[in-house]
Length: 365
Image (cartoon, rainbow, N blue to C red; front, side, top):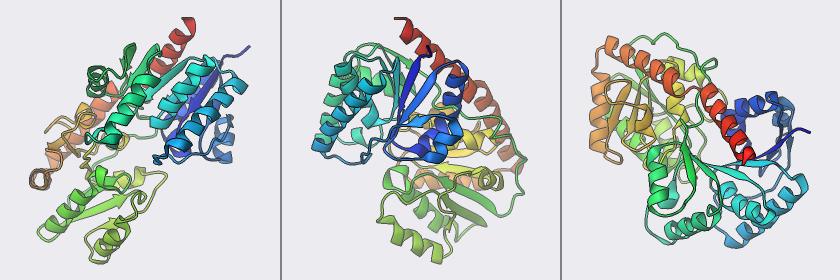
């Protein structure tokens, strides 16, 4: 009988974008894979040949009563499916799935894809989430992190006491994101790829665009959906002023990356391993990123991009200007270096092989 792997995540987008190859690899290895997402996606089920059991929940809601109900729903699901191992990604599947798997006595491997906004300020959310992790992770054999800093933070705050592994993020599909020749020099195109929200540094990006678009022959593009509605008016104003080119949400960003000279990620909060940065480097595009762990796991200053002090507009502008004034051959060299770093350290094939080894190890205990 085939071993069952139940995969929990909070969006079908993240499965399609980051876990598709892992699921296909597991199926190829003889596992039966079942998904549980908060939304229906028949196209994804057909594409992967898997079943999705929908358990609705709001991924950003802080309603404790609804979250307690989620534990019960996960528990019922685990009892019905009886998976050999559960793989979970993102905070609610990790925490509330862990409570349920303890009660149902099932093995679970959690992946911490970044600390996000929960640990930015020492408020009720900070301590509440910390205590939830301590309780939820108390019996896990293995927890996966995407960078060393996140793992150290969890150990220092006693949120885990078992084994842990650092994997290189979700990795990048090097066959899909192939190296592309660097575009001509003018106009120089910067691109922001991500959810439009404060913690992704969107305000910094807009402020820098307003300053530099008046002084240099540059284009500032934005790709992504508006996560925080208060940015709709600001974005529309900057579009009308000719400061920002908005491409909306794009399922496939490869053509946009190919036409860009540099990807920019001015994030203010913890990133696991940012996939947009991996994808840009894989295509030979340097990146300018804030000096947060996760970002600096990939980008080395003046090697495959530039790094600035998180939250500092002055330092951000300094690095953008440095890139603008760089010789074109140096920009190309950064892009070549980026491709090599991604090939050596962040291949999705290698990441998925490590996941399968961890699953086999968990099942052997």
